[in-house]
Structures are given as structure tokens and as C-alpha cells.
Amino acid sequence: MAPRLSSRRDAVLREMGLGPIWRLRVREAEADATEEVFEQEAGAPAASGTAAKIATPRAETSRAGTSGAGTRHAPVVPPAAAAPAAGPQPGPARPGGARNVEPPRAHAAAPQPAATPALADTPPPPSAPDPARSARIATLDWEALEAGIRDCRACALCERRKQAVPGVGDRQARWMLVGEAPGAEEDQRGEPFVGQAGRLLDNMLAAIGLKRGEDVYIANAVKCRPPHNRTPERGEIAACLPYLDRQIALVQPQLLIALGRPAAQALLDREIAISAARGKRFERADVAVVVTYHPAYLLRNPQDKAKAWEDLCFARRLMAEVG
Image (cartoon, rainbow, N blue to C red; front, side, top):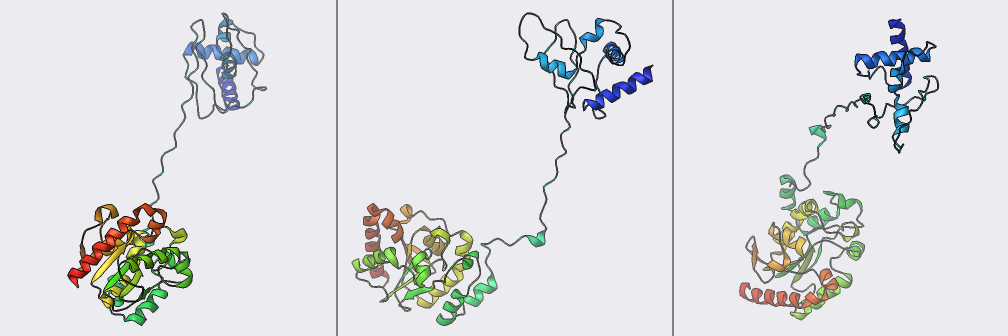
């Protein structure tokens, strides 16, 4: 009889979704009572009331929401009518000292190690300079330099530009102004500082007796327009830096004016806060550098135009000293 009941119990457990992964851990007395329940379901007469104390998980679930002084026992569902379940759910403590069947413990999946890309597929850092490229650009004349800027594909900005923007102005100027990157109109026309920001810059120059194209050269730290006029990234500035270095070497200005934080960081190779750098003289390869606000920033923050005027006056005094 024992082998037949054991086989019957295994079949019922498989029907309930508990075997062969899980095996119920019960005391020997409770196991005998469970065998009596299965024997009764198979047609054998019930031995005693002990089997009534062992309930299936389905019955335990139905009793979880019962309230009141007394607790009614749900009838045992025959295996043929019981729906397959993912596993038994633990029920509340039963009166009368009967033990609940221990709920199965879920097996946690073994963690998989993160895939490591092959070293051959890892691109170099975008800000890593190419010494050979920088050395080649350092030998270019004006025509070859501007042609190289227009054909440059050193970073991803070339994919969405309409054209690169090398620079404009007097190639033997004492004043050199450096912005951050072209905007939409500059991308269309191929000239830096056009449109509303360019008109404001022209007015700023006129206030200190200067004029675009006369003793003034204007360029950008980045030669292609970033998408949606966002701030240039460090790698993009690094890719264009050899071009800016060569422009400065060809112009040989006496004073550099950095218009905005990205331009100041490109010229000085350090983190810069405009508010802290204003009114100070910096040096770049023996060339004096003055930091001020970008005209586009001043259009959004007109209250700071007076500060930009102070910076231009400081630059004019500095030019009188170095010139």
C-alpha cells in the first residue's frame, strides 16, 4: 500500500505544481494524515478526524479572508478538479495547534557577470589629442587651414552641420575675439557672430573704438554648430583646438578676449567661472587674455551688459599697456 500511496501523492503534488522541484516537509504524523486524505479520495474509508486538520493551499487561501469567532474548514478539493497553481501560499495560523505546511522557497537566479566589451572595440576618449594631427595642422597656412576646417570630420558635429565656420577679420589684428561655437545663422552663412548676437558684438566693439574687420579677428573655439545650439562638449573643443591654436599663431594678436565660459576654458585649459574671472589678466603663450560674457548671454540677461562694458574698458586699458 505504501508505494501506491507515495506514487499517488507524487502525482497530486505534480498536479498542484509542487513536484518534482518541491517536497513538503512535514512530521511523520502529519504525513500519515495526508496519506489518509489521499486514500479517502481514492475510495478508502476515512480513518479519523486527523486528516481534516491538513488543508490544501487552496483551502488556506479561502480562510485568509474569513472573520468571526469560529473558523469553518473548507472541503478538500479533489485533485482532478483542482486548478494547477504556481505554488502554495502560506495561510494564517489555524486554531487547534495544527501546523501550516512550510511554503516553498524560491530559487534565486544566479547573477550573470556583466559583459565586458573587447578592448579592440573600445574607442579612444574623445578628448584624447592626436599629436600627429596637431603637428600637421600647426604647419598650415591660411588657405590650407581654412580648407582643413571646412573638410574636418574629427568629431560628430560634422554630421549635422551645413558648413564649418573658420573665422573672419583682419589676419594681422592686435585684437582677437574667441566665441564658443556657431549658431544657426552662422551655420547658414559660414561667418561667426552674425544675427542678433553679432549685431550686439559690433556695438560692443564700436563702444571702445573698434570695428569688425579692422584690427580685429573673430573666431570660435568650435568650428561647427552643436545641435540645438547646446554648449560644446569637452571632446568637441579638444577636436577643434589645433585649429584655434594655428589661427592664434598666424594672427599673432596682442590681446585675446574670451567670450563665454567654453571659449575661456579652451584658451586657458582650465575650469573657469566667468563671475570669478572677470577683471583679471590671464596669459596664454605670452598673450594676454581677458574673460567676459558671450553676446548671446547678454541678450538673455541684459542686466549684465554693464559688467560686459566694464570688461571691455579693462581690455582697452590692458591693450594700452601691452601695445
